Amino acid sequence: MPYYIYIITANESSHSRSVSQVSEFDTFKLAKTEIKRLRAEQPLAANQIYKIIFADDTAAAEKSLKEVREQPIAREWEK
Image (cartoon, rainbow, N blue to C red; front, top):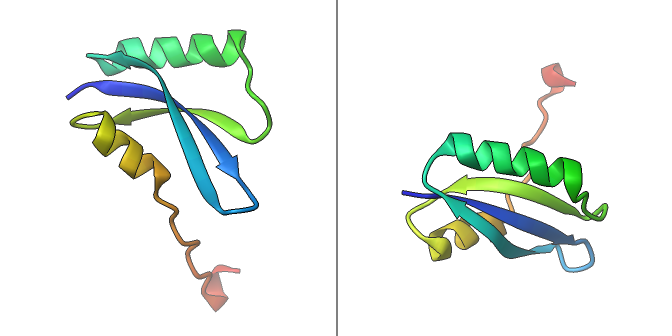
């Protein structure tokens, strides 16, 4: 399975995300090196981030990245 690099844009008004694929790599080491280079040379807007994901294909990667997870409930003793 390949590693994909995506740009994730958060839409705060609709609580959704849009994703756009940047590149694909066979090994994590290459993907990690590329994402570090991108973060240093091409900074993104405040509502965007670079993300690496390991998935079967682009459809599975995009589905996983678009999921909005609920915030965990803080217990009284965790505050």
